[in-house]
Image (cartoon, rainbow, N blue to C red):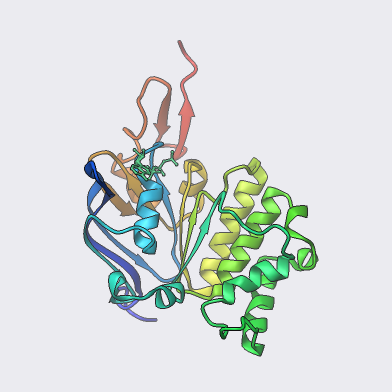
Length: 266
Ligand SMILES: Nc1ncnc2c1ncn2[C@@H]1O[C@H](COP(=O)(O)OP(=O)(O)OP(=O)(O)O)[C@@H](O)[C@H]1O
């Protein structure tokens, strides 16, 4: 087993994220220092508008950092061209427009685009990677269906399969459990955990499912207005990091059960 330092897939140093337009700079979060490793499943947690999507877009390279650096497997993200980036990071965005007229197989095959030749012709290796992604996500029975025929939960598994077929060391998903019922939320997060372990990939996803993330994820990136930190759920609980995540009038964090509870008294 490699040492923990050699297992680092993504590292941010003094990263500042936000937006820059003609009205000036809008900083969303700063001093973000993260190290994530192979095989880890990591949830990004924080209140609405804190900057989870902005962070994911910045570490995926589709949005520029305001300052600081992002390194993927030791290489500065900014030094990678689009194709190199697509072989390092796959991105699954909820509500991303996709061509639902495609069959499930065809949609997953799009994950091979960074590797196919200019005709988009699939090689034997491409087909093997697609079939393997279908098997890992247990969607063999959906393979020939059209994407418009799928439920939200089925589509989410297909999008995860596309990311697996892309075969990158890092997979990033923005709110993959949105629109899903409680069973399918748990199913998707457990599937991500299984995939991280079986494929040795780093999987990072933003979510509002904090109780689920605490139970299943290896690490949590917790975004607070004052700071962004990464640690195991256990360490975050014992350091009291969840206590002031939400205003205390409605919800409190119960350290014994490791879950948020709604206050019932008036
Ligand atoms: N294109 C943009 N230009 C300027 N500000 C933006 C832009 N997109 C988002 N913001 C602002 O950046 C902040 C962080 O937004 P972001 O979508 O990253 O938060 P989030 O934690 O993912 O939110 P949610 O949980 O509601 O999805 C918000 O204040 C938002 O209004």
